[in-house]
Image (tube, rainbow, N blue to C red; front, side):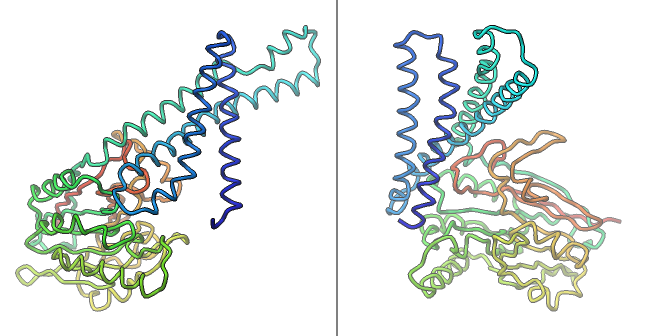
Length: 417
């Protein structure tokens, strides 16, 4: 097994985490009869053992062909249980820090207390033990429920005004899709409902901002005919995202990887989508034009590849007063586009999925991904330039969504008088 030392260290850390959480279980069950304590302790360690067994076997399960649904659910439950224990441990750690501080204070300034009262002083807090377990259980419940949201498509509509937009394009309706991740789908009918939602918007233009698949072009075998239904008067344009290059797989040869990418490009063509590979197109109405620029994946984050070449894509388009850029990774906007290319009025991105976890209420939104990306979901504006980050049509890894739902974006463009 590759990276075997790391794997065993990881399992050892998991067992350490399980033992740490078990200390809180012991605290809360201390007052129960012996038989009841034995039952609770047995249940806890049985679930732990089953989770670790699944974790060990998951690479074997995922290496086999066939439907990924059950495997993804198992992975989600195991990962959810781990995250729940991690969150619970933060409460327990707070309690342990309190106990250490109390112990140090007791050593510096001895108190005239009995042995029993001293033991009580340094004992675990029942309140924090309960709070930790309830927080962990709440997170696990949310992740379990979120599996039901993976096809709960939300249509988000916005109206944007640009002084450089030719007036003949007033009212131009764009639908943006992003991050389809076909390899994660298990329900073609649910996907088809999402596609119908797009068609119901009657868009003039459909723009897809990357990650059609998780890795393999073959993931679209069951779904290309559904997405081929997407039509618009001005066309359907697409770009590639980081997953489309299959960099996250091991290939027997570079030629195999290259052949997979060529097949993926052929899928775009078969669906009737025009794939923009560091290219731009000009859309014309009544002798007025706007540009649509598409770049391959380009990220300001070092762990993601830079296949894109904006200068190449932009070449010859500098005389177009208004352009829309399709760039999968939103970090591209601030790193290279913002202010340097003022004619790129609107940039459309995806990539983050809003981490498929967080909350959005009027005036406030939060997701762990915001600590990695400044722009991670929704609308961002600086001066006259706008970035919109789509939350993704599909999902990957965790087969669900909590608070950050799959998105179909409808954007209407208007010029300012």
